[in-house]
Length: 128
Image 1 (spheres, helix red, strand yellow):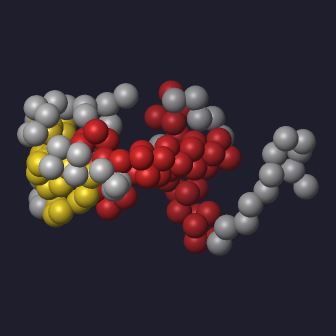
Image 2 (cartoon, one colour; image 1 turned 90 degrees about the horizontal axis):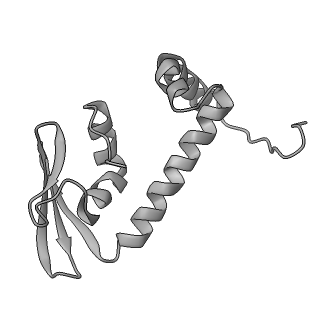
C-alpha cells in the first residue's frame, strides 16, 4: 500500500529492469537535476514524456514529418505552406527555414520519439 498522496502502478520486470539500469548508469547526472531516487526518476521520465506528447499534439496538425536522413529531418509546415529542413550543425539542431536553433520546427523534431532517441544518444538536447 503506497503512502498517502501516492499511487502504485505495475510494470513488467523487463520494463522495470530497463528503467533501473538507465537510472543506475545516470544517477550522478540525475542528482544534479534534483532526481534522487528511482521512483523520482520514473516520475521525471513520465513528466518528460507527457510534455513531449503535449508539444506533439499542439503542433502535429500544423507540421508533418516528411522524411528523416542521417543528419536532417524534412518537415512540411502547413501554416507557412513551406518545407522546413532541420539539420544537425556543430552538434546542435538548426532550422534552415527559420534560421534558428530554437523554433517550433526544432520542438517538433524533439517530439518525434524515433528522432529523439537518436539525438539523445548523440548528446543533442532541446534548448530550454
